[in-house]
Image (tube, rainbow, N blue to C red; front, side, top):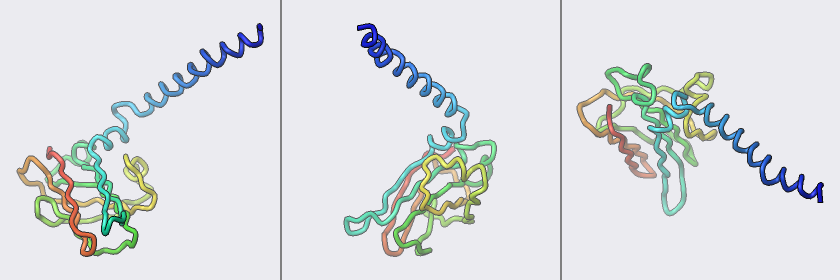
Length: 157
């Protein structure tokens, strides 16, 4: 009986306590100032579908409000992860119907790359830079010659 009581005590009280203490540590690591939380609040996903098949995935983080100390300038900048089943450059990006000014592949050794909020190891990550306008919404369009156009809307800052 004594052995059974101790085993029950361990199962009912100690194991949940261990899980709760580990969870609390994880919450502290992802505190409100973490790079991950800053970026995840302004990240959206879009699935690219053609003929009822998934052909790719976009994950887009609006960098200006995510990292205001680094990206608060005259441009709207987006971190875009692009995964296509057949990766080609048959696409363009537009913000409120205006094509991007620059597109830069993100270096895998940077802090930004290492803290991508929604990471897809098969995607290529770029920073797309657009001239800021006075619109209150940012209509980001991914236009692919084969897969069509996909829209993502963000509030501008």
